[in-house]
Amino acid sequence: MDLHVVQIHYGDGRPAPDRELETTALQQAGVYDVAGGDVTFATPVLPEAERDADRIVTLGRVCGQIAGAVADGIAAGRHVVVTGGNCSHLPGVIGGLQQAHGPAARIGLVWFDAHGDFNTPRTTLSGMLGGMPVAVSAGLCYAPWRELARQQVPLPTDRIVMVDVRNLDPDEERLIHATDVEVTRDDATLAQAVARLAEQTDLIYLHVDLDVLDASLTPTHPTKEPNGLDIPTLLRRIEIVMDTGKVGTFGLLAMYARGAEGETTMASAIEVMRGALTSWRHANKA
Image (cartoon, rainbow, N blue to C red; front, side, top):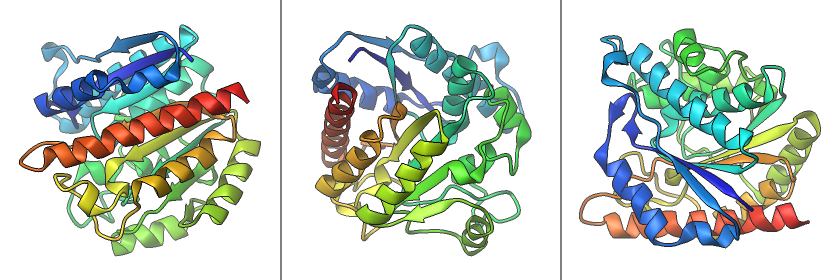
């Protein structure tokens, strides 16, 4: 299984050297060897001249660079892995899939995250852009962010499955329940949800924010949450999604393996990436 690894060295729209350290650590750990094929790497860069005083414009342009790198990997016939960065780069990944497969492609999203990231400017308590990308990709807010990310068509909410989300702002939770987004918290409901999703989509983007794990496994993550998954459970649920045969791109983002306990967080990221790629390879052999 040949890979094209898109390494995002940005936090939102700002360069983030820590993200480069994390993606380098994944390479040095040999995680991509389990795919059993050739591996190419791309590192999207936004030229300084294209940065804008409007942070939404700058973030959208960063996502546009990510979209180009994702589309290049698909055009080369490779399985695309996205890593580094954070959840705010979701529209860039979806934009790359639409650029490669066409705006009419039926794309599904399986979202492993402690948070829904489904806030809009009207529902958010914090104002964090990182809490809004799923809503942006669904067309609920910040159209310039989505459009600059080359995502021409919003994701219908019935093509979004959230897994083990456990911390939602009150208005965000109400907004999710007002849509067709499906939230799952166990193997059985996840299997049912992704079986339905696989039937109604051409491909699935499987996204993992490392904070879906328990806080003890991600001690340096700025949005870590208690009562999260252990790694075997996460990998079992990733395998359920991979087994649909519809996963076109896999992302492990928002690692934040920095500080005194960064080694613990990075070890979790390495184990998750290695296990996810192993499941993906087996699914592609089936």
